[in-house]
Image (cartoon, rainbow, N blue to C red):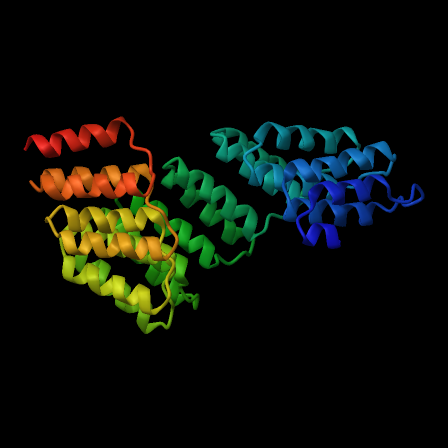
Length: 353
């Protein structure tokens, strides 16, 4: 346990190999699988599984389900499928956790039909789906723009006496918004509140993103206010959505206001969010604000990437500020960030204006 806590994967695995050969409890090894998967990776959990086989410890359905979960989390779809087949070959019926992982794996790998077939097989085995099962399937369908099918499974969920939760509604709102059904997304939020489910930061982020994409700035602002009135603290993604939206709208005053709120709330901004800010300021030739944000990034030990520097140079070029573009390029060299073809193209266009 100490080796796992300190992140010493090699030593931890060595200790597993040297365990007392009499140690044959499946539950003990399942705990090891979880520890190694959480602390390291699916590959580390896989080595524990190989040790289980070497020692002839009888795996349980839970053993396979745990391993599947880590394969899916790392996008190792084929491995997840093989483990699911191994469950059946071992004479077990897959449990709900295994089916949830299989639906997720097939959906994320683009096999939507396969995901639905897995759901159907779960029902045929008379395994009761839970909210997680439906939420995974709804996410799969959302990611492939299948709103009509989502409605079918949403209704089916209620037939199983399952109440949609905040995750379910957030997925529904996101799907409707992405397909342009803005009023339906708003209705889903209203329905959610009427059923007594309180929106969380993910729900509000989802709706704000819908309004940002559809350029409905007033509704975006009202949603932001509603979030604050409900006492929900914005996270990094909230700030990213708001800053990106106000940058697109050219509303630099509001953008500055949100930035200041993020700073006061100690919000952690990603490089892509900073890039959005920098390009917004550079596009209007605001050299001082660009310098200030670059300075803030460096203070936060976030070194601007080649992509970020290139984007700023491009924005200054479009704004007709060749000297500012050149200054950013000099800053890039001083930071020892390597320019690429895009950087030089942007700089040449800026200087040619």
